[in-house]
Length: 355
Image 1 (cartoon, rainbow, N blue to C red):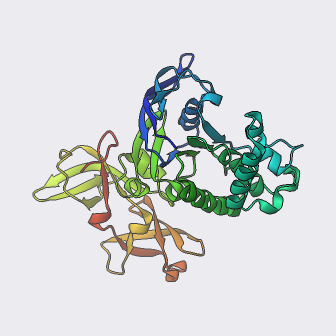
Image 2 (image 1 turned 90 degrees about the vertical axis):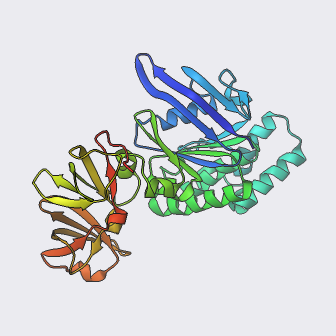
Image 3 (image 1 turned 45 degrees about the horizontal axis):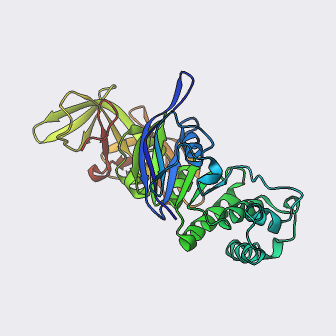
């Protein structure tokens, strides 16, 4: 396997800039997930690492070697695409072994590589079938097996599960994670699904508008989002936000909303009294308490089976609450809540986290 270093990478299509100076170091054997909304530049960055897109400026190094000008076949990487890209006239075994045959690899080595990959992916009973006789999940496993037999320096995954239904996505996520645990392969995985990012990654790279917003472990991004974008993108249901003016009085601080309501907030040294600020709290951290400090009008109840999503409003400001308490299936017209100080996130005028 290999480390991958991305240094000040920029990409433009004519006058349109897609990536604006990306710096990232991926350690040997690490599983990195690039996550962000459509159009954020994550797939473009992956394709540049693969050699499928030219680099406008900056350097990409694989195992210390600059690869900007190397053809994809010379970079020793394997890519798994959103579409399975299998040869329909070939069997599973032939699809998996095709790249090795092109390299004139010895037959016994091909048989050993295909057999080992098939065993890891549960493909042994399917080796003689053609792709049309396989389910979507089985086809994606064949595509992964085709990548594994090459024993590349790095695996690149470009939204490989987006064509699968919800149940298969869940199953394949687990299989990819177990596979990485077996192979310890350097892997870069692109997705717009934050659940995939949270469950698969050693580290997440959150991207927006061609800029890396935050890099860290899944819990880093969940517990300490660097800005409003990361706070809103990571977590389901999404974080609640309250916009207002940060006011300090003695040892206490409040956020005064536009409607005049004040919410107590933690005192922060990184923001001046009177500045515009945004308060955030995750739905699962809102506390339902009959003696809570705030009254919340109940607007809508969404049972999910595991828990309940409550849509409420506090002084006409909408908010979501996630609870496991089934008594909240019929809560009445209003409930009382608390916003625990230790669960609050504060963001400054520019949307950056304030400590």
